[in-house]
Amino acid sequence: MIKGVIVMKKKLLLILPIMLFAIFYFVGDADAGSTTLNLTSDSYTLSQGKTLQLKINGVKAKKVKWKSSNKKVATVSKNGTVKAVKSGNATISGKYKGRTINPPKNLRARPTTDFAKENLFNVLNSYIDWEEEPVALDLFAGTGSITLELLSRGCSRVISIEKDPLHFRFIKEFIDKLQDLSAIPIKGDVFKYISQCREQFDFIFADPPYVLKEIPELPDMILERNLLREGGLLVLEHGKDHDFTQHPRFVEHRHYGSVNFSFFQ
Image 1 (spheres, rainbow, N blue to C red):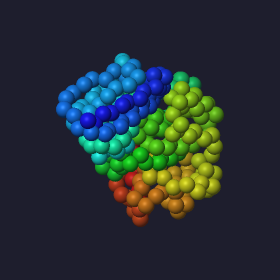
Image 2 (image 1 turned 135 degrees about the vertical axis):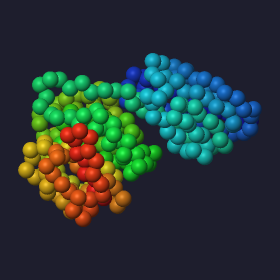
Image 3 (image 1 turned 45 degrees about the vertical axis):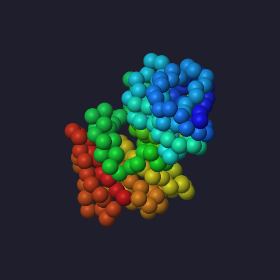
Image 4 (image 1 turned 90 degrees about the horizontal axis):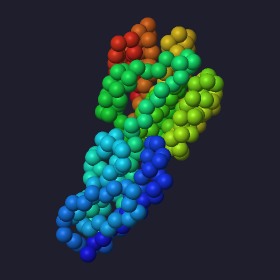
């Protein structure tokens, strides 16, 4: 008889993005079936071949990004259906993706439009395997909307650099509310950070002010410092007056309205 025990900590249900952990222990065979688990439960026994529907009170399943630490033992679908596969143990985790940012009117940042951001991340899906939990860097973080999107996609760590005191305070406050340790906001100058950084990233996003005179040099500043891991991706948001198609590491260009994105690898 294969049995599984899921251990839930109720207090985790109050955290956004919600991090839930379900630990499975499998030790034998059993009849297949389907059961629904409400995450206010403390434990549950699951047998090999059975499925378990994870649910969170007040949260739509599609708003949660589910992941299994060991797909050979237990799989989890996009809608939160867990299936016991074989003997072993696995951790099922879920991160709530429904949080939105409403910056106060006194912020001077120009956030990437929702339309442009949605289309950008649709394109990024062909470049980035989110299941691999990439490490990301958000330069000129502004309101932090890209940081939040990266966290919701499953990045294991996101470093956000913002110099403006008001913008940084806003980012820091919403990250504190999320209680997500994978988010690391840093108040500081982007160019100084680039020159001193010794870390590499799977994905780097830069959204400087469109009037910034150093925009043409930004790709080289980042790439020559070797901040991008092999196979990684740099995306620079810029206005229509800049053209990077002749850059040796340019990959493609996308534009949505007045928002332009240039891709580098």
